[in-house]
Image (cartoon, rainbow, N blue to C red; front, side, top):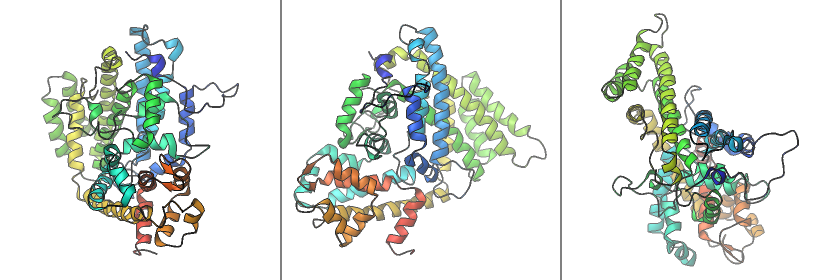
Length: 482
């Protein structure tokens, strides 16, 4: 049985300096402040949420989406704390933990997508497919054999996952003092990990194999396995999700499902008839009275818009989003409180929205999202993004697997001075990521750094790029634009 004292562990991998005498923030509010000013968070402003490389100021980016998730997460956390303290004071002591859940979810919401590569989930697919082909068609001597004999390491690339990259970035990649990166609290880090599995344990067909939602993907690379094991020990989650990961996932779903609808209307991908048909099918025919009311409200919002207001659909959708999000938030809070014992014992492993009363609202938004993602503009830009990512992977994987650049004789200084093509490409990789790899590799023999570390260097570099930077960088490297 998990307990909130361990789950809300405010300790860190490296002991932090104490806060000043007038600083009354809790440790998780400190986490948020460490992150909000960081470069990885700023880069989210040019990473796609739905529409890659879009020039519109209206549609969401990963940054605006993350701020919305953070806000919803904080709201859910405040409600959960107060209700738990009233209904189950034996499990949740408000005097000791007031403000902690909301602060953790605010920080986790801000950073939950931090490791995503350019072009979103399509970027993940591009990386996965590249490495499936690469491992199949390449052999690079002893170093290659060493990695291919380890199924977990190969699966880390072939099933590449932005969630695992997020943990890697938060734990290691942002160099400030050492390899502890932002040195976030155990509780915040554990809450971000939606899939506490390795790349071979996760990535399952959960419906076919009758597994819980936490087996759908994976949450850490082998490079961070030791850190992950320490994390689950300190928070006491064992092989289960941290309870707040359910709430983070819900906040994410609530934010993007309703927001995608707004963005889809603004981009003229959705019209009134399409939305009305989906809502009618999912909500008006639902046995739940609240679903029927939401459907009727959407119609009322549209029909009652001022006669002179041109964007009647946009107005109706915004008002409907507010109502729908409120319903989903309430349903999630109620379900979490209801299932607290099962969650703390690890018996609950479901999508909490789909287990709640508002499941049909979520399904309606999913149906509309499927229509949006078939849009020609999105498809064209995703295909272009695939070309960019695969092109960059080809260049930089060839560079870091070069025998002349990485062998037992080559030192860090030798690599910096190398005038070969591989050396020039290597010099273009972020010095932050190069320094982390060279100073804190997972595996190193003398001067020789493992192939696993070198391949991670490439994915670290590419995942750190924004959509626009990746496109411009690729154009320059290939001579399309100088």
